[in-house]
Image (cartoon, rainbow over all chains, first blue to last red; front, side, top):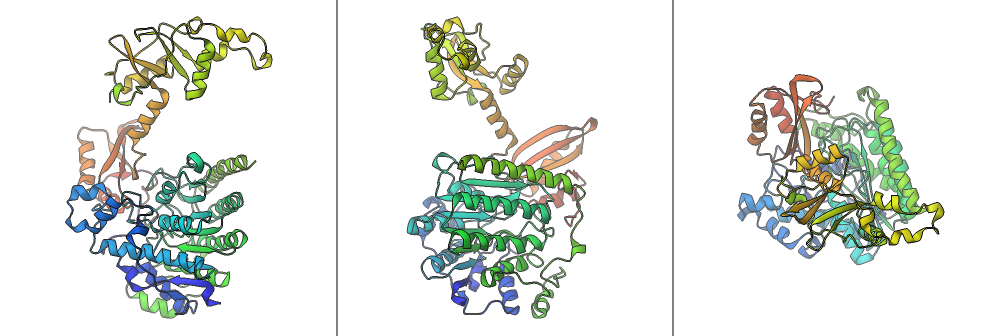
Length: 384
Length: 216
């Protein structure tokens, strides 16, 4: 039973660390693992150690000159680094950057192998999901794009049709562009509209090119979107897309930054969306992929109040087919409360009185509904 | 920005004696909407658009009749004289001409010879470049008093953070001449530090970043 679901982890994955003030903080992965352990949801039998990705594997997506720049980042000038998106405020250089990122890519490939080689149904690597990484440059906190590498690895070694679903509040641009002309990889990203938010792309009209036309889907939703609208349009879109594409395997990028506490984005979801997202993923994986599902992490910048709960629910659904509710384990709260000034939540779900009241709610819902119909109109035309 | 920087140099042309049907095929084959008509010296004598050709074609309801109309010379339906621009004209002037004359294409002529073509689409592409939305980045709008020196003041806040600005737009604030809006696209995924700096410097941010921290 336990062998059917794999949790890829070791402490070296936390070495992907820019600096203390940087919003991207992999302590989230440790907080998630311990929350699950303290809740009795995860034990050592589920955990597998990640391998390190080879340069050849990284080159499935990235240019050799970029890989070389990451490896020798300490010796390059500011100008040379900028060419590769390194040494910026977003992706500053840190020691052993190549090694740290290769471990994350390796962990994602370990998850892939667990499912496709070693007979697991599902596997997670919450340290992965670095979806902004581009072929020739680092971007938006991401160096190597483990998600894109994993997709290409599956294409090359197993020739399966891959559905990549990205629920990060930022557009999954790196993965989209990597497979923009590939009809065997379908990418679907729901995210806050790029009008204000990085990276700015992910319009509903971005559909793919050449043979890949019709296999990129984007659902840009309005700032301040809340649970009901998010869930309703996401669910409808994903079921439609899965039915249209009929994937062999599902990869989800589970960025947890669409929550009202998240400091970087303007979406206003609560834990309700993070309970629903994995349940829908499981259904899609069971219906089309014989259960094969690999989940990755991603964004998520309230590392105390949001990310550990959100990611834990992904694992809970993989393992038991359902989310956990009620109180969080006291042991976990006690241990970590002293490390943060944020008041840790007491329960798995968000108390209703904490959920903000958005005056423009009706308009936002209507706008999102329109975007959804634009997306679906196209899907149906394409199929008929 | 000069016309020569955004014009297309490979121009599909015809001579006045070519047939309407040839023009129609060229429009379809190259997915274009305008064909300049040139003489042997490559100087412009006219222009045809897809609409001119459609006007000249028999109705789809009488498709079998009058097909020989399409064998007439293109000279019979081309428009002349042609409004043209020079490679060193400004893109803004092109926009003005498109708007005033309600046209969507301008041949570019230098020394009496056709050297390029610029269309509505090229102009819109340039507009996308000007807004900076083709580069990954975050968008920040600042409402500022309409007075000299304000742009460098605000821009220096970005400079102090070492943030690269991919574009700056300035536009009026509603109908109030005392204020204007500065729009910056900056190459970062984390606008929090810069939002904090701008607030501390006393600038007013526009939606959705006008909400004081925490988010709501």
